[in-house]
Length: 174
Image (cartoon, rainbow, N blue to C red; front, side, top):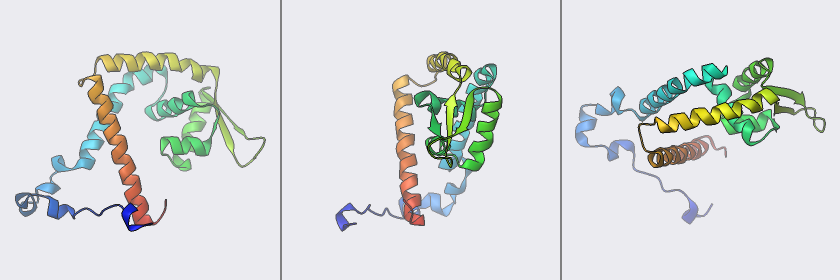
């Protein structure tokens, strides 16, 4: 990698924080933690979705798996894991439950027996219409205007990509 393409290193966090914050260890307070703000927001969003998802007979992890499968079905377990950012140890039990519920099928790829293909059943496809209604209702009840929600989503996706890059730099992967 040439010098011009290398990402610039930022100053250490301690050098970017106000002196008062460092002296009083303000940055260690729970309400100052970005990780806790993201965690709290995720919990609240999940709680907002829960009644609707429960009425649909699915959990939030099943919902995000369905979102990916509504975009592309069939897809391999590996592709779904990448899309959902889940490892196979988390994804496999989730998919087994969805199969027992009749939402998906799992079968070996005839071209490559090592791969398992996940496809929606008619029941899984039918939930899409209810999900559309749910998302539209949530958008109508949103505390922030839709353009701000879209901007927030985009910023979180950018932040996530930055974290992936940083993790790859630290681990040497990527």
